[in-house]
Image 1 (tube, helix red, strand yellow):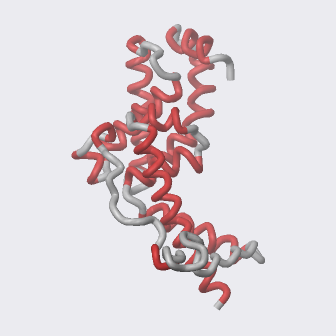
Image 2 (tube, one colour):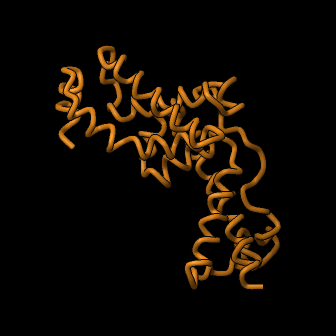
Length: 207
């Protein structure tokens, strides 16, 4: 990919080859993120298509206060909120505080203040085995995918952007217009949920 400045200049000039290059490079990740927000693959594809139309129409107004890619993904999330996601249709991401109550790990699994090692595990979690064959690996992917699908939308999107698409904290905060503290809590709770599901899965595998 050329530099962002070059890409932006070419896109604004109507360079079809550059648009095709960006489309091919970013659309797969956009589709994966959209799929976390809407109920069907067809709807996710429509979200991505509408996003690109909005990008083409809005390039003239892009002011460069974020990266071009961040701006595109912000449009994507706004489109996805309109298509689906009960929570995001009525509440913008910028107003979502990370206010989930309760611990992410059952406190009874840790030693109390009068135990020999307060705050340490009562019993350390068992190590997770490596998948032994393709069938087990497939089951593991299915379990992880189901765990992600169970998350509240804001946690699901943050987890997808950070752990699947590889965005850093600043980029995720910019795309979703949330604070770093909110992003940390949402990501921590999302990871904790997936970890619990996988822990249960491996316990069943060992049984």
